[in-house]
Image (cartoon, rainbow, N blue to C red; front, side, top):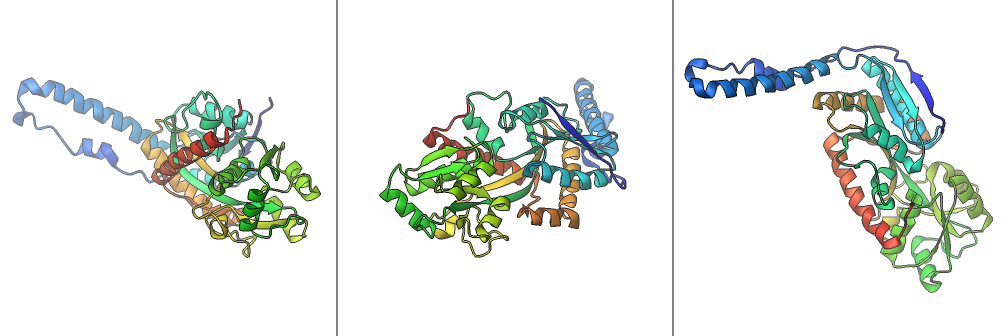
Length: 361
């Protein structure tokens, strides 16, 4: 399997402003030997010395970080949405860090190859991982993973989010989500829906519709989003979720009808199209999201630095205009918020996947 690397060079450098943290506490908390019995002094002194030494190493590392290029692993093929997002962020992240950021594509096994590589990398801030919905669904889709999606990583930030578009062929007598649900109930097991592959977010989004609406439709998996759209336009299937970037031109040209978008709010590219939650299924919220992780054990000071630089990168006009052109919303939440999001998403999709019987291996 071939790997592709691209080096993004920074255009400027900055000086890191480190926080005092634990190390300062060690410096300014001297032990008063006259006030402590000699018997207890030795173990206490050794314990404090060890703690301060560890803190000193971490703080010193954070002060000098980074001293070499940082690698951003993208576990998907070049040219896709994740890759475009990763490269846009990498360019501005390099400027903030004052070091090169190497975008390293490691596709395969629904993202597992690149993710496992990141999990096994040194927790020193020099390897980062761009993840998407597969990170929270693969744990339920695969019988075994060689990494834990929660324990093996330090969340940094959820960076972007974009909805899917619920599409139907224009000949289908359903002009909104409620009418599609009614039609599916009238013809159980007869309507066909497509996805860009078994276990993909589009597949699972429709399985969630089926579960919440209590309907039965037949899944037709494709190898990518373009074959899906081609057959949907041709009438070989009647419905499916498509990404907003590819779907919007087809909707605007009248070749497909958009019934709803899958996120919690309307899409900027299709402002007149309601959300699935608005139209029929309250609480429905499925998006194509991207986030950045570091290996577990990465020093907290480095995670904080990376979070700050990534959020700054997301605010750059070039990044914002690029993401807007893709129909993508910029997020940039905190490590704690992203950690909670990952855990919720794993639990949410575990229920859907179990009900659908979807498996990849």
